[in-house]
Image (tube, rainbow, N blue to C red; front, side, top):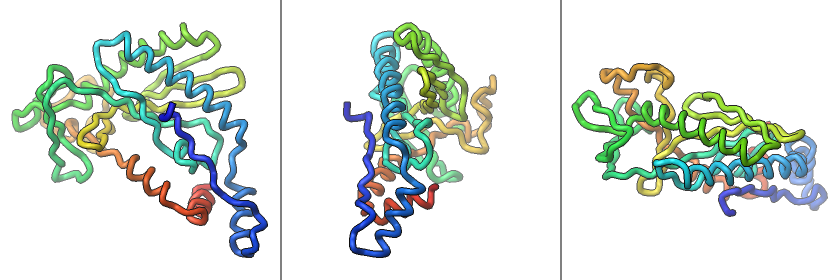
Length: 248
């Protein structure tokens, strides 16, 4: 299952004949390495949650979702603390024609113009756009039902959900392993993903109102996770070791 991707450390042995590199490796192994058994235990719990969540969304909801997309330091080999936090994009497949337009006042944020039948909102110009606010409300219900399904499928797992900004956070406990999983709604378009993460001038997603005069309520933030993965993949050993030490 390729999307359960973990980048393994590629740092060589301390003794290498290069005094400066040896010191860097020694410092790295003392301060930035995570215990492999902890990583493996967390990964097993995460994979079970992904498996059952996708089983639910593929069979028991009227909406169409893509495979969950792993992102963040846990999947780039850059985590320097215990592997207890994981970020997953939840891609929603739209049923209508879409095109995007970047918001002039907020670079990196986009309107998604959309001709489908759900999650639409009329913006200040009278044009129908995909509403991240309405999407959030739908995801609340979908994830709630998914949690009920997973609890039946995984009786040894204790799963709790709460809001975490734009994400739905799942706190999962199984025996002596506890992890947090952020599920962030996303829309794919021409090789990029756009996530329902509110602009700081937007109204809170839990607000019962979605005022048409607040244009920041209607925009989606471009995700740069794929570009970040490529940048990490192109790093050599020294750059990776230095980055993890600095993160620590």
